[in-house]
Length: 321
Image (cartoon, rainbow, N blue to C red; front, side):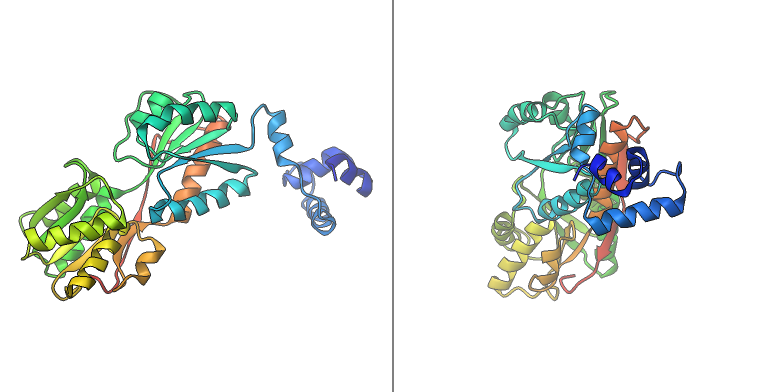
């Protein structure tokens, strides 16, 4: 049923239907509610895709994410979809696991005439390969490099403060010898936060690794036990690594948290079911997704946006630490 047909059925103008379904204050609240209730009863749904096309854009938002084997991005994708769908948009999913794919992904975004982009890659890659005329919200990367493009912003969990909170928590639990597993560089904000929270009150070691998967965590747990036998706490780059570490410690008979406490970042849902349940810190994925999708929509409508939006994280204390 078209909007014209719906209006004719109710014997009212198409303009009145349009205003009522947009909840416009230009008609009375009582009339709006009456039309909305009839639309619900008759099963009428406005053609949002058609409305967007008349504005010269599609109802697609590109979602460029790392492999969904990372629990954080798999769970975030569901929330991004929900918030985009609420505004009449659907997601076009691309995988950015390889840097060499970014040029092709940029072309795909143009070919499908996406209205906006949610990019799970660093700002340098986005600025080099993604169309700079399409509103883009970066939802990954450790640092934002602002090149002055008004069509690009950054939404990210506050990883530095998360690191400080997690480091302070472990220190408060009496942990004095901490190993950070999965750091790619000294400048990583989550690592810097842990390091600054511990200060001189605890010894901190690091194991560098760019593969932050569960299998990598499982392998590196053996290195922790071999190289740092005296450690009493392990902080993993993300929960996937932490779950892999817990699995290896369980196999080796290492008491957690008796001998070694284990904690991670992201607070993914599967961490609560690890053996033992994982202590972790992460953002509300609902708030994260809402901020990211809202950023795209605000730029589409020409509204002012903050260049960087940090999402506050919460610590979930469980049995592992």
